[in-house]
Length: 365
Image (tube, rainbow, N blue to C red; front, side, top):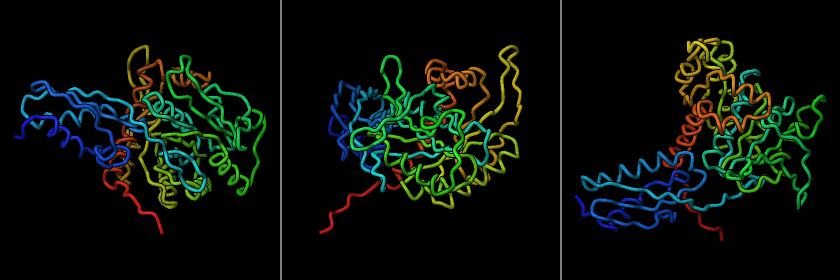
């Protein structure tokens, strides 16, 4: 067993992978002060806001690594925010670290609610998040979040998004862009493919998103050409496919998975929405739409299963009333399944980064 001293501890931590990049934390400047008092180790670790949703996992892994150095060692982690701005992404010039597309094979499966829930939960877990409603024909994000207004032009002819803010400003303001801000609620958008393509590119490239850890994109239902437009416009970190448990929804979910694979958008996994209902009066559970179908289909297709979202009356009411953000912030039971999904997503991104960390490139002479 090596002696327990600062250099031994630092050498151990220096090689621990940063979950965002996969590179050693020491090389990224994320290892701070280390103090040792007998067998008690206190270490300051910097973590980017991109990785904050899995902060508990990171701390547990570091504690396990340090306690294995010397029997009887106890570890205390002082977690601080490590500042690392995003680079420009793709031809759009987006300053976003990870773009997440949320899609479904058919409408009516709660895709927009899931996309909003993922974005809100990422934000509530410490990340800087934007939400883009790419469902041009049926934009519902503004209603779910209780947002209204008309985007104005910011400096440099960028479009200023509508921001979701919490009452005490303790969370990052979340920029939101949707066709729902640009057309009246009773008007229909009747566009052919080229106009749809143009609007998606404008939402991506002309919106003043700022610097984000995640941009969550609510896709239109089905397998139209929006996925192709997105795949050509910006590198997408991964996609999430939403479905309900019954077989007819799973048939369409398979098509959505095939679509993402065909346009080379990596799959983060499947989410089963409307997965059972627990009666608040008697406590009995009812599988109204079935249960477990998405998990079985994900295993069959070798796609990660991110989690199940049960039917929740309070969540449904909050969405109808434009209070989805407040409900997820205040209702731990409604938030818990989303937290599990978000942790699984970010863990998958971290695993991919660790398996293939980016390498520094030399400038071309």
